[in-house]
Image (cartoon, rainbow, N blue to C red; front, top):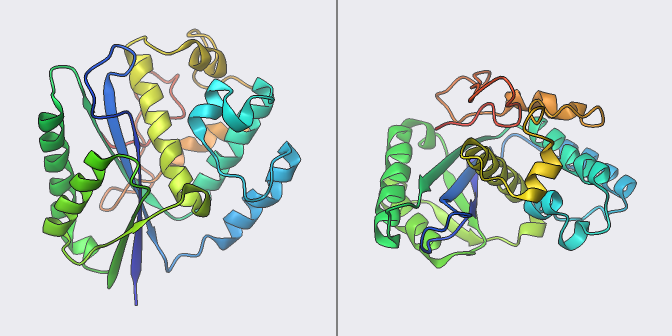
Length: 255
């Protein structure tokens, strides 16, 4: 039986527009369970004790950047290396993804829901042949936001009526943590395009002059991020250069 896992994470909320939070984003990460990711997971978890983290550590990319929660005692160099390990894992697994976002300005929650629902439905509908190759499609979401949970359930019920839903505990699934990585990187790029990065983001990614490519000799793995994969039928090798060649992290996102 062929099974497709779909991991969903979001960034932002359905609340009113705020200058510091102008976007709502969610990402779907797709994994054909016929492609094992056990070895990349094993490699990732063997590295974590080198950073002083347990093998079952759950990555949270925003706190890594902001030096919060589990990462408050880590230096910027150490946090960059921690992020690097997750990025390396991402590039070593056979997955694909799609990110959806809206700018919240002039959109109330109802209009946001309608716009995102339309985008998601068209995406699923246009790739119906791809999804038909699977006997089971299982959507994993942590039910972090009621609005997104309802949106997913409604659209999948129409576009892929056989899809199953499971509530996920983020610490249990590395690919859910990858969805968090993609959301955070997409949001950072969008904020940078509007020159509204926070102080912690500016510090973590460097000055505006040399932020991208992240000119950090201790982060060479970040340079492989143009390998970020897109969902079929887009060619896996396709990348996008956004704004300027400074952008390395964000190459490969579909808009």
